[in-house]
Amino acid sequence: MIEYIRGEIAALTPASVTLETPAGIGYIMNISLQSFDSLNGKKTARIWVHEVIREDAWVLYGFTEERERELFRALIGVSGVGAATALILLSSLPGEELAAVISAGDAKRLKAVKGIGAKTAERIIVDLRDKIKAGDTTLNISSHGVSAAQEEALAALTMLGFDRKASEKVLRQLFDADPGMKVETAIKKALTMM
Image (spheres, rainbow, N blue to C red):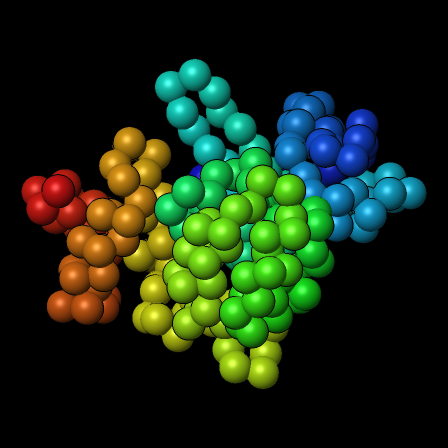
């Protein structure tokens, strides 16, 4: 998986950035308006990456801050929220403000964002409210005991086409039983349980 890409900004629009690496490879990534504002006027950048690999496409999503990528990943983990919707949310409300809105349970503010209906707003609040620290606007994903190995195993299972929610449940069981489990072992065991 790609963690981040550092390079020269070859092209920048409000919806995407193209970074050219020193090796001469250009990567185009979808970005939020918040990332666009951060990149505007810069010549080089380091972009945190979330990659989605499907049968018909390999799509990269880029973020100027790792915190914004965490929030994006949390949002796409909510049933009914895709990558495009998550980017619209992050473009409409800065990361800290969006986290505060979710933490406060303000469905009205979420519904004001284009493409977010009442049911989706409620689902986002219900699924993510516990992942937001009280009085803090950063995600508290680690408080749920999700290790780097568990995240990597989850990414592998979703890339293989397994449902994210089902994979999370199986991996949670495995890592609760053996927190030191290696990624390869977790994936093999999860495949037998799904």
